[in-house]
Length: 121
Image 1 (cartoon, rainbow, N blue to C red):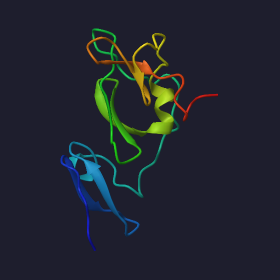
Image 2: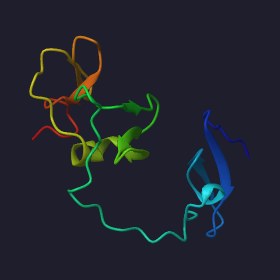
Image 3: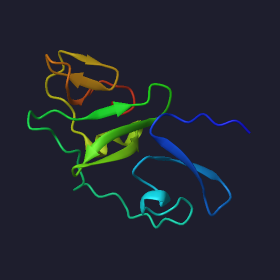
Image 4: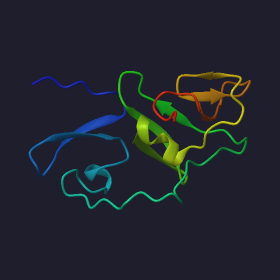
């Protein structure tokens, strides 16, 4: 079997017999619950991405996948693109947007692009 592992990730076998990829600093080797055994708490609307002092957001999305790494409550979390609106507000300034994000003049993320197809209503 072949595995492709991105830098800063590791593979660990789950209790269900499936191999799982974890970002370094998370998962069973770092004190977290292993996949397949985890008790998942429901997401609440009070959990939001933590803005920087400048009011921007530290977000990186995998260009070949569906996962996005963002800062939530001061720590790093991974969420799917479709769930980004739960954590990150829509941008009010839409002059500089591409794909899912809008940027300021320094190319820092200021919010989500309200016209992006995944969350456009």
